[in-house]
Image 1 (cartoon, helix red, strand yellow):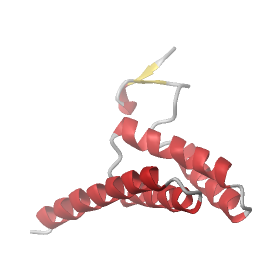
Image 2 (image 1 turned 45 degrees about the horizontal axis):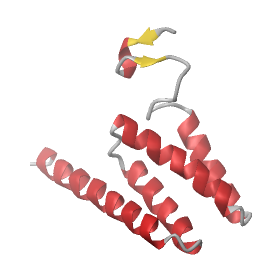
Image 3 (image 1 turned 45 degrees about the vertical axis):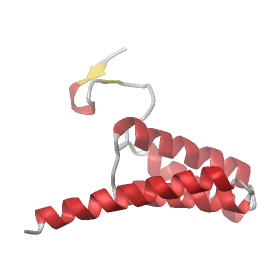
Length: 106
């Protein structure tokens, strides 16, 4: 295993980092699966994406969108408690993101 200093000492070849190229592909795949009424697979793909966001502390608008997309699928499939938790996470990210943007704009 090789360590890469730029990726917070993540092991190269292991779980992709939040900035990796596989994350947008996973999000797009989840959208396609959801459109094809394959919600279980879409939920699985988005769950992996939000796990990566959590692992690497991604607090971007895209991360909040991932949580909201996952929550929507969970609501559609009767997973209300999980959906509510993900909506709360999305709001927390958006709140921190907007506070941070407000400080930088001063």
